[in-house]
Length: 154
Length: 154
DNA sequence: CCTGAAAAATTATTCGC
DNA sequence: GCGAATAATTTTTCAGG
Image 1 (cartoon, each protein chain N blue to C red):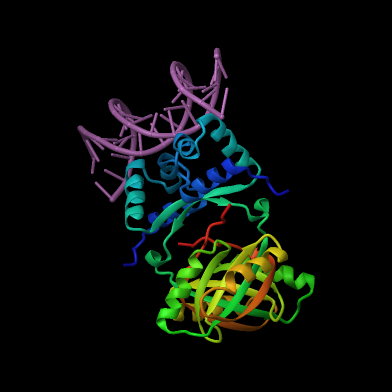
Image 2 (image 1 turned 90 degrees about the horizontal axis):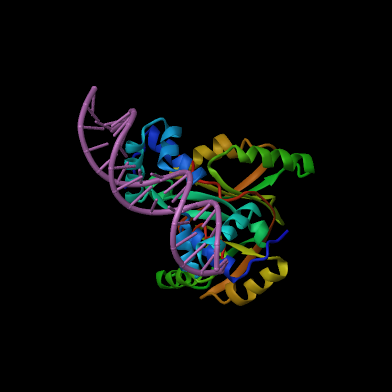
């Protein structure tokens, strides 16, 4: 299940994580192989699902989406069916950037992105508090994003 | 400072977020404009910093990096100089995928990615607990990543 | 500000070695 | 895995509305 990478696969992945748009020729130059094997390796990594896609990254600042809140959520029902319902409902809320089921004092941790506090207030009222079986929430406002979306290091 | 997007910019961004590697011709077709204005708009979005880059996305599962822990951190010193030191030190730890300074009961929230619990134990001991001025930490282990890296919706 | 087509450049693929 | 030749795509440019 886990794909076994060699040193050259790692180089390839790191280059593509840094810039998804370089050509095979340029990638080959940086990795130190010729184009043929690099093209084959990239294809293999794609087909194995190691590379899941190539995406443009957008600036939250330029889009005016700089307000981040982490929300601890407790459910009134944590049986499997209720969890599944919650998981499904969460997918439809674009403001929820991350959602993790947590082992411990609360059930879920959400990362919510909004324009500002007022916008967050709206998201909480309209979207989060109405998720299925939400019993209580606790919000932690971020004052500064020190590290965001740190890419996987391989 | 905030870039004012029109409906077509939004379409362009959403397409590039979904697939960073489509050609201008294909992008133009999907947006419903000809190539010339689409090429100009993409260039403008890049130069304005709205698009910060194009990156390959990797599968944590295929890389064997499926263990996620959220760590609340309290510092013994929260004066500006100490915060700056902490912020800097955090950048050098690849396992820390996110780090946010929090207003409230604790000072920082970290998202840490590791292979498994044993690997997390190592990261905590070797990396996190040795960060400058760390007084206390509280770890919350994720049992399921319900939503991850939700792309910015525009 | 957009269209559409021609021209120029770049890129991926295929081959023998 | 290499390197060159071929084949395909892509970006850029430009006249015109």
